[in-house]
Image (cartoon, rainbow over all chains, first blue to last red; front, top):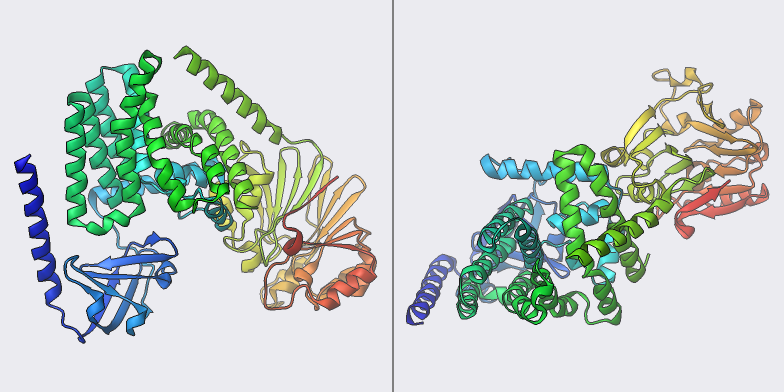
Length: 372
Length: 245
């Protein structure tokens, strides 16, 4: 107990020190020009954020930037923009910043493993879209790989209106569903510990294929801790390990607490760690494949999903209740189709049929609840 | 475990049976996709599909194809481009990512003809001599005009053809009365000449149009269509349109 607290305290102290050093070199009233190169746009509600070093820029204009482009922002710093504890300097329109988009759209070519994975991912997307019509193909890519840049605008609007847009965002929930499904599948083949290791490997492979975003990496760390804990440890250890991981993440970046993806990851992990085993105990031998693992993640994330995406409207309650249970099945079938399309073409035609059928049912539900 | 497997198999078969309802019915379907300000139309009979124009990039033609073509059919037999402007061919790359295109008819000329069973496609415009480099600088003047004949049914697709070319076509005596006319140039006042409409006397005039700054469809074109006795359907008001024969 003592050493855990000591670790947490030292991480917190180091973090504050580094952040202060990073931001104290900038003075109030000083003009700054920040060039965001090859940025990644993070969407949160109607606003989007890009960052470079200590500089962060968040507003609605950011959402309209081209992905991976270049944009230069200039202005003067004010006290309200410098967040020394967080180590961040926020650039805001209200502080007289002017911005101009440079020769954006240039993608910096990646190298080595990252480049290979990106290429492989692009290949999966291309082959899947060639197998399935629109918007079912895009829905499957969104659900399985969190790949939403190809979603048609009309369908995206329907997802938003129906309160189900979260299903096309690769989040901790997806990671835990993958973990649960893989654990179930591997338990057919081997013993529990071997199956757990297999499931963890697939989870990390999934994270890489889904773009390796920080939110997914966080979820994968949490998921791995819990899966290992479930296979080897005691339930008190799992809870502590999870609390430690979450605590360290929050100390490093306290703003995570309001990050939807982080909340979903923690909820899904708690679902797998606590609700899943509880359901399994209740159902006893009736669940040899541990489908309760997936169900636990589903149940734990549902309140957060309804809160953030449904604005607690009646429509989203109904739409999510109908659509969410289909997500794990479509993830499984979709992953099968995507892999088959990439590796074994004739098998892809067979796998595509039930995958399309289920995706088509979801598209109809989403169009119905989201307005056509 | 056995129960789960049995239920999975039953549900899978039910879902498959449901989507198999997309199987073609053997009738002729003319579909006018809602692609905003642009043109994209599908002629479907059985497993045969001809796409006439694609509309603009991200206009929605791929979603339209997704709705109209069975999911297992990944081939569009023929693609005809009326003329190479962004609102007519801007989404070709998107279509090619999803479907194989059997034959691309990118520069058809009058006299070209394709037969597919009891379906006939006749190209009425432009003349081969008009395609000579420098003969015309206005791409609209070179719009491919396709006549679709299926039994007694006639449909005419006119791209962005202008009134002057329409009059030449009307004078040529090659036009017959049609059931469906794809109104030229999204209802521009510089198209749909009264002489042309009189020659084709359409029962139904379809205007493929979206939000625009040109005033399309113009009141002048709408008046002339009404005077010709045509019922008017518009994709901007009615969305995707389908005619089954």
